[in-house]
Image 1: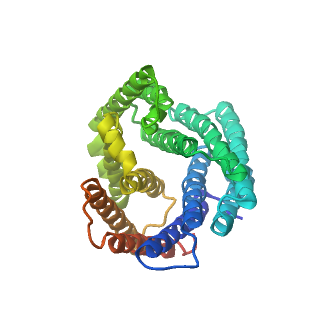
Image 2: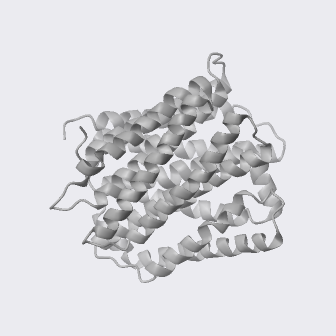
Image 3: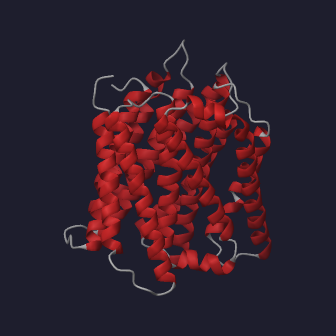
Length: 403
């Protein structure tokens, strides 16, 4: 029985190692030959397990840790929910490579959504009942709401694949809907809430905290259409998208300005791996927001969605660069990870792998735009995947010592 956040982090980071291993297999099959592996099926397993087995699992753990007080250990109460989410994630990991979207994989996907609903209900109630309020709580509630909202896309995808009625536009619209409310809703609001909560623990109050929250919350739903500008949307919806982008840019600027006066203090007492992980995550977030804003230009939007390497590079920038690095940094700062030479080595190697992966994908994307074949990009992407896997292997080994 896993009893605390440190134990659950070990479980989660092992899942991340498996995500990375599947990534190596996918990259190997593109560069060389792996005839017994169905690329599409394995890719489905990779993405679903990355979301549920790694990011969602660890976010749930860290949200539960926010409830931890001297009087209670909430992990006893939430253990069955965390185990259920883990079981559904591993169910998807085992079934998607075999059948793609089929009866068993869709069953585990559906069960994972119901687990998310249960977690939302129980956690929301505990936030309301808790005596110790946090400025991060509104962010957590928004995150839970957007996670529930994202399930509409997941249900639509499962139904289309099960009944074999998927139209290309409907399939893409549903996929981007799910991805948007996971990335920009559930993941983003959870991580920002954790940041705001931790700053509050350190007696740092964000002067424009409520305004920042309202800007991002108001922009989340219309910002979905940033991923659907290739559809024939009405002009007034396009105007809403522009407003959403302005809100996001203003929200990020105000967040940075609110934290800026406290940077020297934060840098002084946050450990080396923690400050680098959070710092690089913020840089990746800034790049993400700028790229989102630039996609409102129709010509750039067509380029972005017209080339697979650009889409893959953006998705990996957000999942790895923004959220994975932030979550690892938050775990380090809160002492849920054992910090030793092996762990630091693993983190450094993993970060180098992410940077290499993004650089090669960027070069590949630029080459695709100019219809230029860039040699050895598939081999380099395989190398980047191996670097990330090696870093995570070091990190997992470093956590095997008794607590």
